[in-house]
Image 1 (cartoon, rainbow, N blue to C red):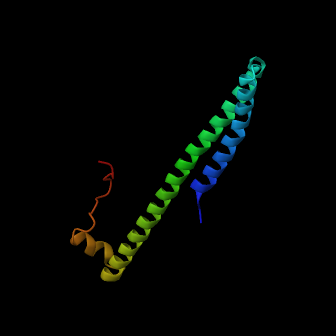
Image 2 (image 1 turned 30 degrees about the vertical axis):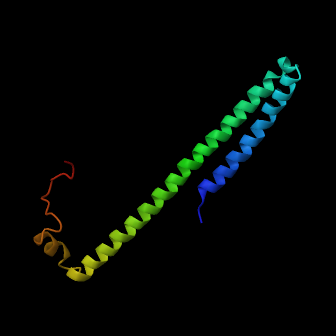
Image 3 (image 1 turned 135 degrees about the vertical axis):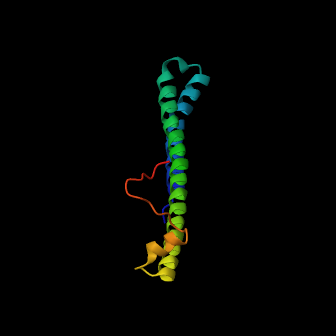
Length: 116
C-alpha cells in the first residue's frame, strides 16, 4: 500500500550518495596537495548531501502523516459503528427527541453558539 518512509529513505540515500562523490573528489585532491582549486566540489557535494538529509526528514514527516491518516480512518469507522448502533436502538423518527431526553445529546435553543 502507501509506504512513504521506504520511498523517501531510498531517494534520500541515493541523493546523499550522489552528494558524496564530489566530496570524495575534493578529499582526493586535497590529500594529494592540490585541493586549492577544487573547493567548488566540496560546496557542490555539501549542498547535494544536504538535499539528501532534507529528503530523509521529508520521509519522517510523510510517515507520520500516513500513521495519522490511519488513526483518523479507524476513529471514523468506530464513530460510524456507534451511530449505526444508536440509529438501530432508537429508530430514525424519534432519534433526536429520545436522545435529548436521555441526555445523550444536548438540546440547543435557536441562536445559541457552539463556541465555549
